[in-house]
Image (cartoon, rainbow, N blue to C red; front, side):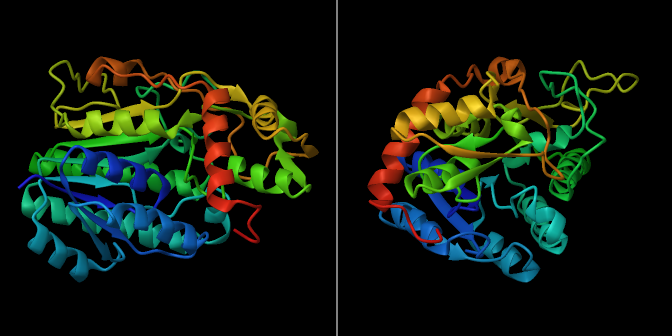
Length: 341
């Protein structure tokens, strides 16, 4: 049976990927623990979008529950796994590192064991542009070394890549990691800048702009992300025939293992991002310029040529258009600025 096990189905990227898989006529078993890191009501609203579709089944489960996850694998026997669950947030990882250990390390280890025991056709998992850490060479390329993370969140994502390679090497299970670059769009996360800015601006409040507004991010629209993810899911990783152990490329291997950037490829200065939001809202932002926070990268920029060669796709939605679509969704979903969303 063509069953995809999708973790983090009530999350931002997870919901959108599940919807697309269901539209294609697949069967999706979605896992989420519905943790309260941000507004659970938003997660439940996303989940309601999925539960209205045929072919979807929801299982509330924490990936750190080794026995529960093993039992679910035994019951479902998925052919592919799309792993998007994680404890997210760079700054939160400084205050609550244990949450990242449990979700991003222990949870991922349990998932790898399920994939091993059931010989899944392909595991695609979410890594992050945060793994590039203090690297200064732009744009970021998958062959770059990523040995200097500057947040614990980033360190757990780098660890996931290493763990996945080990299982690909030992057991021959195709493993593909996707380094996401600042994803935004409808149904987005309330802890992300676009959501926070929108809520504050509509309420007439001052927005905190870190890095004096000069931070650079490769903002990537959700529809582009989903298209790339599904194309990758459909093409299992293979060993790289050109892999040279004397000059190893961190993004490929003699094992069925691949790493890809998935970003917009057009970095945007934060103040320009805010200008696009001002235009979409018709509201002038009251800005409080502040220094960069601990764990924040100064700039991110994705080289996506490897992804384009692999699956023939490159993200293309302009930031102005993506921000406008987010604002349209936000106004329709909330009707008015939410209190404490």
